[in-house]
Amino acid sequence: MSVSDRDPPPRSVDVHGCDRLYRALTDCHRRIPAGPSREAACRHLNRSFAECLVGVACPRESDAVRSLCSSGGTALKRRQCQEAQLSLSACLSSHQTEL
Image (cartoon, rainbow, N blue to C red; front, top):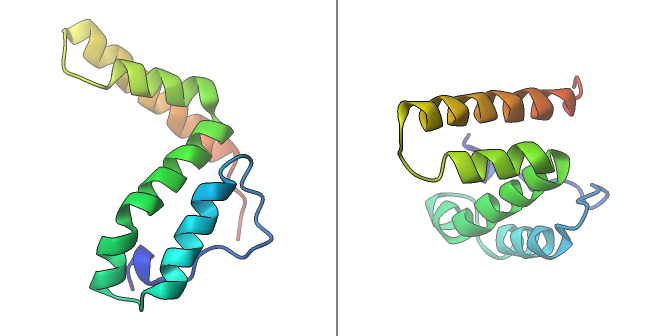
């Protein structure tokens, strides 16, 4: 089962300012049956919602990745991009809970 085949998060999830994207994504999942057509139709909403949540959870780290990793560059910029990605990963890990 792919991620797009799963049901969206329950309505009680706290989406901290990403409400409009959350509603659009759940509406997309409700309207389109699971499978490749849903995956294609909801892809942009899924990505936008994920980016919104990451930005809310780790705003500084997310901004750093967006600015440092947006294009190629010198070896220094590539290293800074990798460091920013590592910081973002650590920040997101700190928000995870055991299931």
